[in-house]
Figure 1 (cartoon, rainbow, N blue to C red):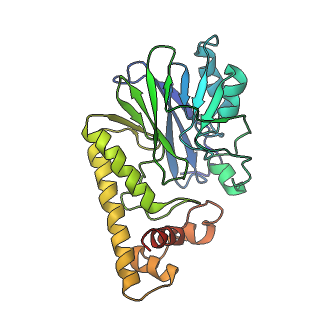
Figure 2 (spheres, rainbow, N blue to C red):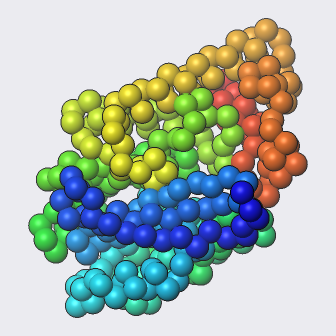
Figure 3 (cartoon, rainbow, N blue to C red):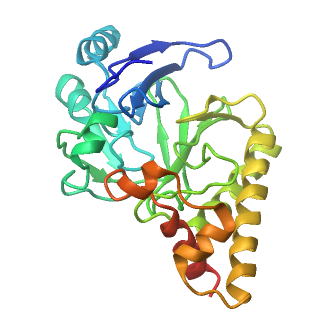
Length: 285
């Protein structure tokens, strides 16, 4: 394992079972010590997210060159974190795409110098608030906007019909018992959004996640996280009810001491254990 400042990988495919929909893959790395894969989708003339800024400009541009430039293009963002809207500017520039999200972002000054190496800092783009709950593609598909707050207040998922495929963005966490949350994340709301998505999974929707990729068993994946995160909430409540009020001490009792990266660099990477505990405490008052 060698030192790696920025992960430039970008690839795309049309996997069997996605009915001609593009699945694009990118990644972020913490100096080569760990790597997180990312995925977004291109459905007819719609991008569902655009990945991170650090992915290869050359390869991304080559992908765009394959697309129909005469089409009316749009970008629908699940949310406006840097690893989901990182190439909005490029798509807008090359395809004259309209960009839509549930909220507005004024700039990306919240991306620290450290996170500039992990995902990158997006160039600004013009964007609008969603103006409908269903978007129609130029090939007859419908893309339904499903509010899934939690990871961020403005987070949404998208259901592609009639394929019945849900692109869930960051609504399904990577860990089963989520320990570290980012700025503005709402732990309790995230569990409720998972419960909403579970209903779709139980009724046969297929899932593509921004960090799990194509999900083989969405019912199990989502159920495990509902159970795991609910057990964390229960444990936080029990420790609080035992008379311990210090957020750090509650966190240490529930999870153990934070890993050294999060102890030393939590603010820079916008991910901390005490934020998790505080979010839960705020939600169970």
